[in-house]
Length: 88
Image 1 (cartoon, one colour):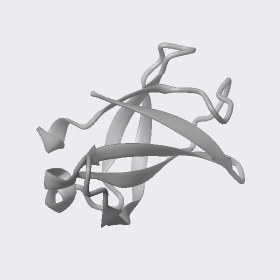
Image 2 (image 1 turned 135 degrees about the horizontal axis):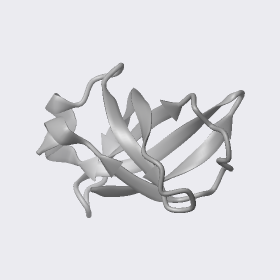
Image 3 (image 1 turned 30 degrees about the horizontal axis):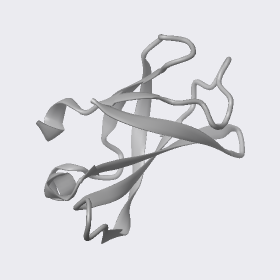
Image 4 (image 1 turned 45 degrees about the vertical axis):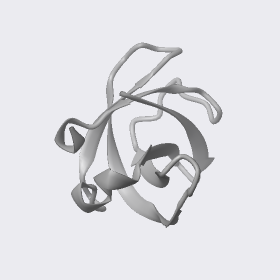
């Protein structure tokens, strides 16, 4: 489980989250995962758009950017939890 936050990009929302760099080979654009906003508690399907080009040296994490198309009731800046089953 990873905490993330959505940001507004056109009609979709983007989720920005930090994932362990060791997951880099398992995460691909187009892959889907579950995202549950804290404010609604309703799980949504998110799609990986891209991975960051740089690993943070201190935390050994990588930025993952995903999109949400079902954005009813969501606002930029909300937080939530991502569940990436294939990255365990």
